[in-house]
Length: 103
Image (cartoon, rainbow, N blue to C red; front, side):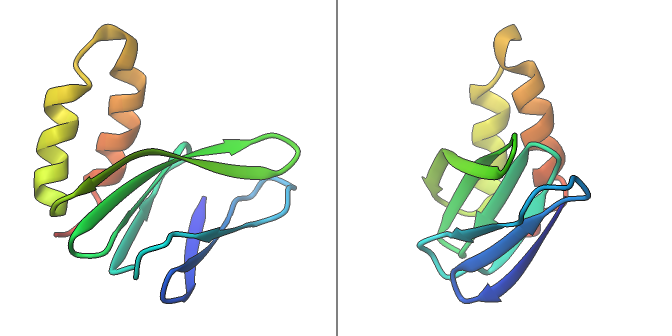
């Protein structure tokens, strides 16, 4: 999975899968991005947005969470709010992506 910034608020997300790339308008000026198989995290310095990436015959992305905060504060939020057994897979995926983020 990869994401390339092509404009201030536009990313192109693609994978090795034989499906078309996704043009993702983030609505924020991107300062940084981290991507895993299932999630994409974008931050602007003030806003952190987590997208869930869905692959079928084409790519889609849905906003899973948005927070007006630094990446460090968002890491704390993820750790404290995704503790139920139902959310463990989601937490591992988001935590994996956040592990690559720099504030």
